[in-house]
Amino acid sequence: MTTYLLSKIWYLAQVLPPPARYVQQITTACTWLIWRGAIFRVPTTTLQRPTAEGGWALPDVAAKCRALLLVRMKTLAADKSSVTATLLHTWDLNGIVDNPPNVGRLPRKLAHLRHYALDMAYIAPTHANEPRHKFRLRIYETIRTMDTNAERSDDNFHKPIGNACGPTSTQLASRMTKNLHGSWSSMTSSLQNTDWLSSTSLIRTGVTPAGKRTPWNTV
Image (cartoon, rainbow, N blue to C red; front, side, top):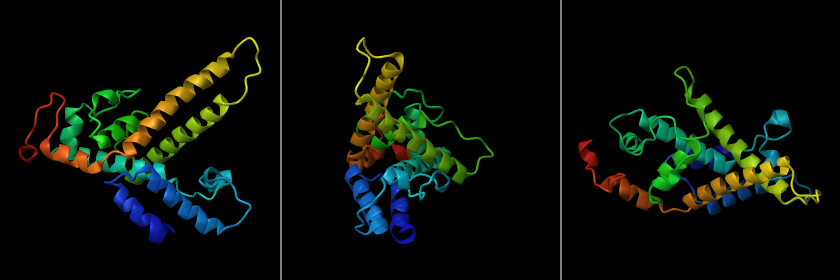
């Protein structure tokens, strides 16, 4: 499965993030290969846990694709002559991204920049001695943790509240967390369905914050 299926997905995901429906289809294919129609199953999230935590270390396709794209963009950003570096500098994303990220200022058609701003805001910067695979693994684990916490917050939010006098501070905090992570997840889902070819055309024409067109071939 890893060699003949997922390796091709990982290669493509570095430049083309897959839409949510395709991520679901790939995950379904992986779980079908494991269970083969068996009746007694465990949740996919359990299989995605590390082996030390009782899982099978099954890759989280959505989180892995996002991590690969971020690492690729980070690598291109180091090349000052690249279009990616110019775009990140133009939109002030080449350093530490503000947390929470202000993606409203970014054009919707620049989906890859929105992905970058949303995710990198929660990831600590790399240091000079950190290997690339360690940085990639750290991004992947951070994204998985955020997604897991968002799901748990959503489950806790829908549990009945037994306090007749109103919600407690813990319950209010859970609601706030659910709202924040829910908004983040919905934004990410909508970005995955954005036409990537439109983003590519904007890169070629050079859209800037002021709406000016920059001849990228002169950068």
